[in-house]
Length: 566
Image (cartoon, rainbow, N blue to C red; front, side, top):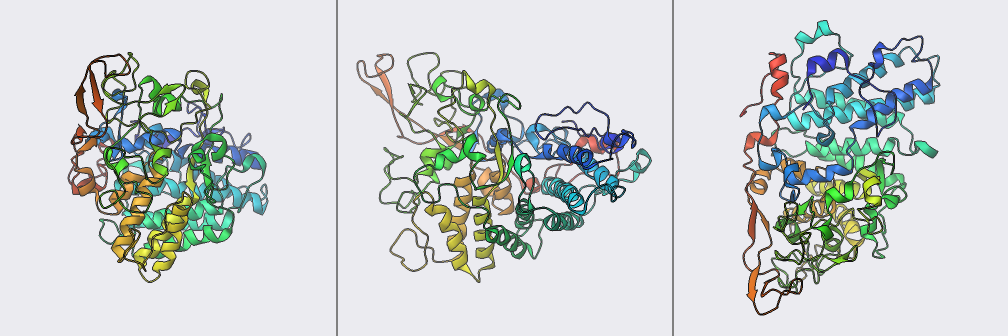
């Protein structure tokens, strides 16, 4: 990972360009002559555009391999973290791991912009100044939040430092950094518009800044965790409520017409009112082979293989967990289940691209969809369906597709509000109303506190807490790194990560000609027997609550001390 704080703080490339495809090999913005730059709103906007590169994109779905949600079917693509290896030499000051973008490069870029804005008061209108400064402060807060979430104490600077100032850089207490980030995000909320017009409608808004504020506060709200902010739940609830009360956002297909799966297809991502902040990608310009890499099940490729524990967390249609459900049948496990299960994970026997998806170990050709038949076939017996638009064929349009990504969507707003209100415990009905709105969108019955005879009954604060946490897992599986950080902030990572990751097991049946694919005498009955272990535990320990400080940074600057346990 490229993350040298000495190099970063002495001169990081900040580019003029758009937020998606950019060239880092350009001169630093602060080395461009003031005679040719920083002379107009367009110049300032170009500088701000570079900051958008820190936002996660579609490939962040792979972050779930670092959790109990999934393993990587494309075996060579799995990294050390997915195996529970926290080697300081593998880490850098990154904001969004899949693109390896240096956090301090972004911070320096933001500091350069804010420094130059001081001299542009006669060039920019008050509104233009607010828009530029609001975006810049949003991204500086976003970057610092992601750094302290990962590493705890980190170096803090709000100035574009020179090489002579580098030897004094030390790690700043995480709470001080958090407070500075909150100052930035509060100013961003004041400065940013509620909406943007035309081509600018993908830029950060007042609601996006409130979502960042809510996310920051919620992450550090749990008093059981190593890092704790006493007013976290109150702050998170208020920021989420501001988004709800704005009236600008809602749930996609809130009337439950059965279109839930379409929410993750590109044209819907960009046109519905659920997204609050999008990282836009344009087919042919910011292309990626996302469908093929994520899941190409009809050819036996499975870039992201759901684990059994994720499959099992989807309730039955009466609102019962499968462990206590009276209508769950392990031999027909997709029957009577939360509709989101079929939207997120392929059911054996489904047809995609004119081929049946059957994950059994034996199939009829070299590209069988069954696991174990080629190196990239599913390791768990499951394939990911979320994001797969059947109208985009992987071997043609799939090579050149764009896939925009929701950084924040309204479902997250409701779940933040539900969780925060429940944890404050004095207004449980508001928590129920928020989480039930999410459930109603797919026809799942409302959680309630009045009828203990029903499986939806939540008698205690902890009962509702567990249901809300399950909604987080179901809704945001394969959407960035939610699960990895959720289990940390809930202080349950020891229990969650230190369990083997499981897949389907099978029972061999031997009958003449029983295999419908190749006519052989052996076949495998689905969903019987004990689950197989497809990956060892992640060996999470309490000190893994934060990552190790990057070893390269310590080697360059002896003032930086390593986190305990590494």
